[in-house]
Image 1 (cartoon, rainbow, N blue to C red):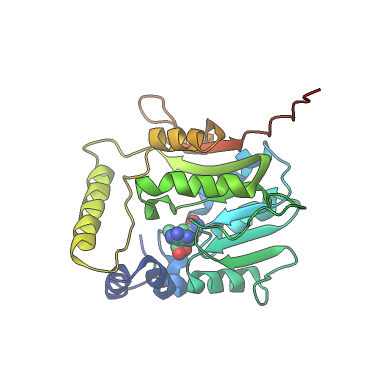
Image 2 (image 1 turned 120 degrees about the horizontal axis):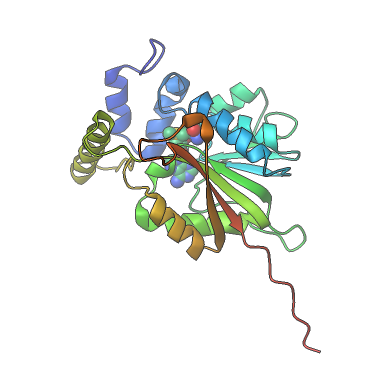
Length: 259
Ligand SMILES: C[S@@+](CC[C@H](N)C(=O)[O-])C[C@H]1O[C@@H](n2cnc3c(N)ncnc32)[C@H](O)[C@@H]1O
């Protein structure tokens, strides 16, 4: 799971006792050597699926970390590519990876420090909302279920009408499997940790459920569909192991003439 360049157990423990922001600041230099970074197999499968939905102009990677999803956006977007993350340390690694200077990393990649729950990309009267595509990888476990409506409303605000919010969702582990017990155990440990230790480190694997996500996206004003990512095959019951959720901001209603 962890390569020799990855964090030691002690380093992970110190990070897990910090806040989300500070924990990722500490982890940042070694993050790309952990299993927490989204694997290239998932990034490639998502990029292929998005290729068929594009072309897109301006893209945003929500909770970009060290920039895994920025590579996807660079492949499928013709215009600007922006990453936003809470952790300055993660953004610094992303900046080094994408090879640029202050804030502006490459000719078209910008990195912004900010909270996904209060996005700093307000629509302007002249330019309107900023993005045609928002992606996110591996970060929804950091949001409690009651934060999803606010999070999805933020994404809806920054997308142009017809714009897409896309992210992969892996099928939940089947009860009784090793993965099931491992994730259950992880979440239980985090709940105990958050009950007895401040600041909290919100990270729960089993809290982000497809049915709830679909419902909350619909409430936020999206048309929601899911597409199987065929690269990951099917479970014994025939359902996909991994899907791409594609939520489309409903195009604006045409103005109705009164006269
Ligand atoms: C597991 S990492 C995933 C990083 C990257 N997307 C990837 O797939 O490799 C989760 C990231 O979410 C960021 N994050 C957590 N809560 C956030 C919030 N409220 N706003 C912005 N970023 C947040 C963390 O700082 C961290 O970089």
